[in-house]
Image (cartoon, rainbow, N blue to C red; front, side, top):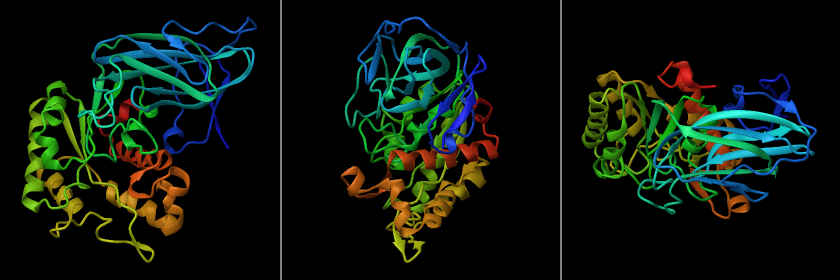
Length: 361
């Protein structure tokens, strides 16, 4: 069953079932009203019917985007995606003739997906896509954002903006929960370890150059630190923490989510990120957090509880299945799984009152 959220004009917008991400109401601006006139033409820059695609030739940066969905003579159901498959608005229903207006702050980069261009570089500028069973959009406004809070993500393929499905990073699915005035800048990249991310000029140095005072930087590594020693892992994390703090940013460590590797009804040490040289990476990250007085989101523990509660069979839906996705992969997430894991991250941000918490819906 979907949940009803109050729109600014007092009418309810019906959202489809999603996850923890949509438990909080999406805050909108403007009004929702019935419009008996004929269906409106698409806004400038937009074309198509299903999907409706919109392109705006803007430079890299952060932009306040306001969209009005609905307005047609028939009921609509619309999802909004920004840039490289970042969900901005979950499936939202509008009654015939009704308009609902929502606002977001969107980070625009080039490449728009993974910083090293894996999976394609996308298009320069801002791209928005409206999908759903009956997508409708009647207005789009784009303007440069004025000093928004930017939450930066540093991580691997389980976090990144995956350009093509079915692979989905949890960083792509937390964006609907962020209010206008704050943006997610996802610098995570497939295949990166703590060391490779730190040294690649397109990754940590590029991220660091943009960090402003009070911007949170969420740091998740472990999946690709398969042969990293405990001392090197600690050193890499500490270096990132030190450099982020020097810019006035707020580092937050995130232990890696588990793999779906079972021994009976319990996850194996490999699933829990004990690496090939015997290093318990989540334990090392927690120790660095304590030593450096840095908040730690223990996503390993939270995802372990989720995956083991579902068991060896039902937990498959969080990952990639040959029967559904065309590939079997017990490390990377389906869109559903990324939504659930992203929900765990958001839950921790709220519980620990981390810098982004005040900007969540």
